[in-house]
Length: 252
Image 1 (spheres, helix red, strand yellow):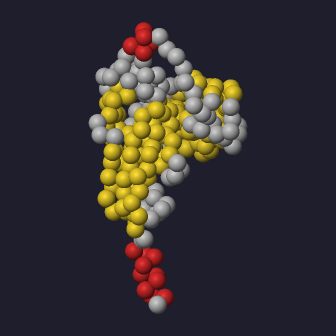
Image 2 (cartoon, rainbow, N blue to C red):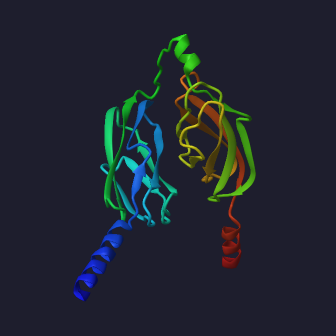
Image 3 (cartoon, rainbow, N blue to C red):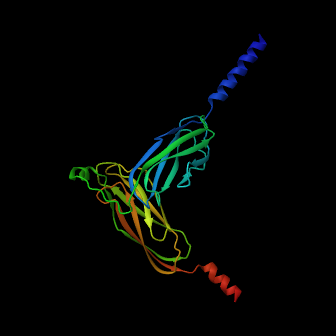
């Protein structure tokens, strides 16, 4: 009788341990960028929720090609909380259709999951004609001032410009990437998709590489078909870093 009781309790504990696991649920496992112009850094953030009862740690995110640069939530995703896996597709020199897989490894119930990005890379000067009705139904990216001045910055210093953007259109607005001649600007949006009438914060991270007065032209790419390429200007007076000056003085 006692042996049977111990056996029952052991099986019960094993059952509880087996059921105590984290589990990841993706909002979507495939994102279609549609047609983008060559040279676009197309970006999408996959949202993933832990629907289990234990924390989940994403150990690695591995794309199927070097043209996709991933980033992800590094801290444990607690039960009921949401993490992000960010995929950036570099379309430079890659015209034509693409369909790429990204493997996600974690300690969740299913240790390996796969998400996908796809789309079509068109010419650099991509132009598409739309009907008036399509334009009326398009998402629309609205922003206040298109100029931002950092004032004085040290060369190599990271600085962030924040913009409030609003979708004044009729469909979800998605910021798809940024372009800059200096290749020194990256971005982040507080929402992966901005619903009609909603606002979001667009952050542009700028790392100046040249000295003197700089006026960096940054193009914001989105699915707004009326104005898909919105141009912003980042201004800064870039000087040598104080650390470099002190080192030169010590050398003298």
